Image 1: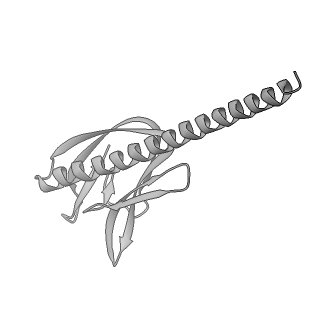
Image 2 (image 1 turned 180 degrees about the vertical axis):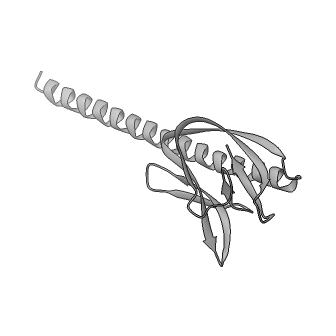
Length: 143
């Protein structure tokens, strides 16, 4: 009878420890899933971009992707060494970023250095089109 409270305390501590480890494992699994989703989305953009831009103007592809958790994907243009390129950047909830440069600038109705489009968590379907601007320069139309 004297050891009963001590045994009960040990059982409660072990139970709390087990619950804590379980929540930590679930949180790590969620973060891993979120990262994999972002990497997969960025890589899908890269592959579809290369397919579209290697074809003739007017070539089209649709890229479907899913972002999980607090992740978002940003598509924008950036001036790199005097040339305008499109950039795909995935931002995760933990502050991690995954960045890839596209072979040409992106836009909706022409090339603009100010182009910026953000996709938040969820399912997305985006149509990519190989287009030419008024000067004949290639760009990736996003619609």
